[in-house]
Image (cartoon, rainbow, N blue to C red):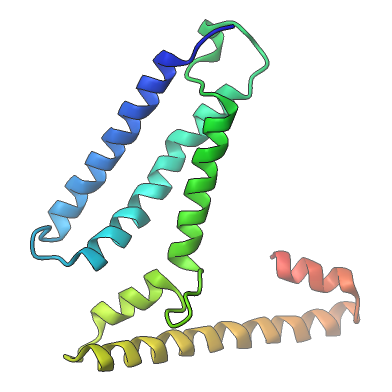
Length: 168
C-alpha cells in the first residue's frame, strides 16, 4: 500500500500558493488594510475557490486512476480527502452565490450592489441592493417564463420539454 505524503505536501503547498496569489491580486486592486472584512473575505473566497478547482480537478483525476504505480499516478490524494475538498468547494461557492439567509438573499450579488450603491446610510444601501437584485431576479424569471411559453408552443405540453428547458 503506497502513501500519499508527497502528494499531500504538494497539494498543501499548491493551495497555499493559490491563496497567496489571490491575496497579491487583491492587494493590487484593493487596499487590504482599509477594506472591511465583510467585503474582503467573500471576494477572497470568490476568487480562491474557482482557482483551486483548477488544482483539484487534475488531482481528482489522478487519484481515481486504478494503478498502484506511483510514478504513473502523479499527484494523488486519498478518496475521502478528495471528496471533502469537492464538498467544501461546492458548498462554499453555493453559499456565496445562491444560499438564502433569511434576510440576505444572495451574499455576493447583494454585497456587490451594496458596495456600488451611492447611498450613505446602511439602510438605504441595503434597500437599494435588495431592489436592484429583485429587479434582476424578476427579469430572469420573465425570461424563463418566456422560454417556457416558447417551448410549450413548439413542443406541446410535455414533461420532457420542461425538463430540457430547466437543464439548459
